[in-house]
Length: 256
Ligand SMILES: Nc1ncnc2c1ncn2[C@@H]1O[C@H](COP(=O)(O)OP(=O)(O)OP(=O)(O)O)[C@@H](O)[C@H]1O
Image (cartoon, rainbow, N blue to C red; front, side, top):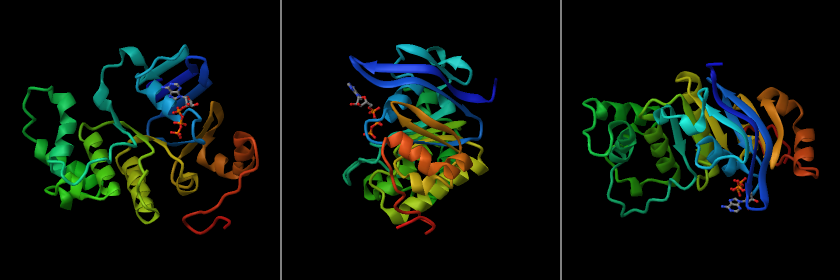
């Protein structure tokens, strides 16, 4: 089906003797916004590596845009931002717009020129993440959250249909986290970009996303956000193996 962007079918992956994921099946479609949540070491990064084709499953299949990941060539259809992106120190010699423009390299090739409208594209991408006014600033002179927005702009510049974000809010304080997630929500709704977001901030994102997948070696739940919210306590207890209490909700609805 053409509107399926990511498809995992009965995927298992082992590092040596250690099983990281088993029997994982998941479909992400156009326009959906998925939160992938799970405790430390539950296999979330492994899942991302499988989707990006960086590792191959021992069993099962991974497809991107209807093609086996090993033969998928249109990398500009996918934007990826890792949790380690925001690690520039203040001496790093590049401006925000240079960093964003470098996202065009995979399209233009290492030794080719940037397209004529590259600067316009940079500004459009920066505008989409609310960072246009910082275009001329050194990347190292931004906060971690601002740097992460710049990396999302770099991922957006090639016009992807799917954004994959691996814990993008590591190092971002609570105050800025909400506006960061709001920005992701706008990208999803207004630009129809599908998003797969690996996060620990379950309470923050559970109202924002359209779908939730709970991973702990296998997928314990995957489905629409409303269903997750309705069955949350049960899902969490089952998935962590012991009762887990919601601590905080950003809109003040949760228990303390
Ligand atoms: N390169 C590796 N070699 C061996 N084992 C690994 C390797 N990478 C991950 N693992 C193991 O696979 C399991 C899943 O790891 P993974 O990094 O996918 O979890 P995660 O959910 O992303 O964790 P975190 O939330 O802590 O980042 C863990 O038990 C981990 O120890």
